[in-house]
Length: 389
Ligand SMILES: NC(=O)c1ccc[n+]([C@@H]2O[C@H](COP(=O)([O-])OP(=O)(O)OC[C@H]3O[C@@H](n4cnc5c(N)ncnc54)[C@H](O)[C@@H]3O)[C@@H](O)[C@H]2O)c1
Image (cartoon, rainbow, N blue to C red; front, side, top):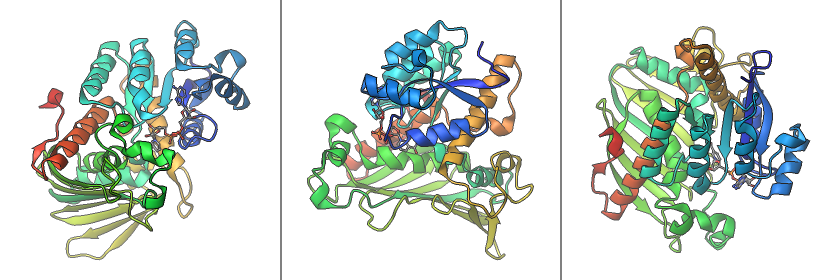
């Protein structure tokens, strides 16, 4: 099946012309020459999706009008796609991802993977039953220095982790006069967005990154959720306190009304032997303070940082690597995982770091826990999905 000169075959659903996240996926998947873009159902408007797909180089028979057509068209091909990315709006992820997994495709699903915890458990079980890979695009975990932070924690440079502080706070929904704009309003409407707005959109990235870097999962949380713009039913700001299964304490702030902040994803980790600070807007530098030492700047691209960092950097030190290259690292991991499965061999452990359906499920449990705790004035609640209790 599907290996063209060692390359894998890739398809995409959503990510049509003008979409926010489509270009970053195409850049990421194409960067290392590991995937050929061969099929897509790119737009909710069939004609526009077919047209754009062909302009991007898809053949006319594989530029599909919708995902059902793509599933039928691909499933019986001898050269069918090896990996399908689902980059459609949130409420469609579950149905599309489940259908492709059941048909034996590997899937990279955008976050949030599902709208409910039950759907998340269903996806985990479906992927396991099908023997398929289901990844979730916590793409920021692909940054080389994020991988390096994880490696530093795992090899004990920080000692036991006492505290992790994560933020994902921006100011792009701060204009009260624009709150009724339909492109903004749906995000704060429970009928369309579910039980949470800002935490489900951005907070889960911060939580995933905290867990990923410290190698611990959230067990309990207490949340203060507020709508700073009073007409909003769902929260535009949340402060969440967490406890992790390895003993770490977590502090997480997420906001969409933090005027002056652009992207705003940052992580700080404090252990017994030192502290780390990294920010998505300055991703090529990592700040490291060993206990009793001096503040050091670790540059992406330095030689021999860690196997995890070394395999996820491409450009010479001093030149900035940005977000599509972080996505490229998720694709690079997936190419290795899929190739290893096909060849019946073990995969490179340094590539075995891509976020999975289990992470998507944990996020969804945290989303519901934040909403529940927020409604109960910050009561501490279980943050784990029933499947992992
Ligand atoms: N991982 C990240 O960092 C990150 C960043 C931004 C967005 N996202 C996620 O990516 C997803 C898409 O977000 P976006 O901002 O690109 O949205 P968008 O509205 O900009 O684009 C959505 C695209 O999907 C297409 N589409 C909609 N329904 C479809 C369907 N049923 N079949 C095929 N195509 C369909 C639309 O035509 C459009 O091209 C969301 O789930 C969002 O949460 C993730």
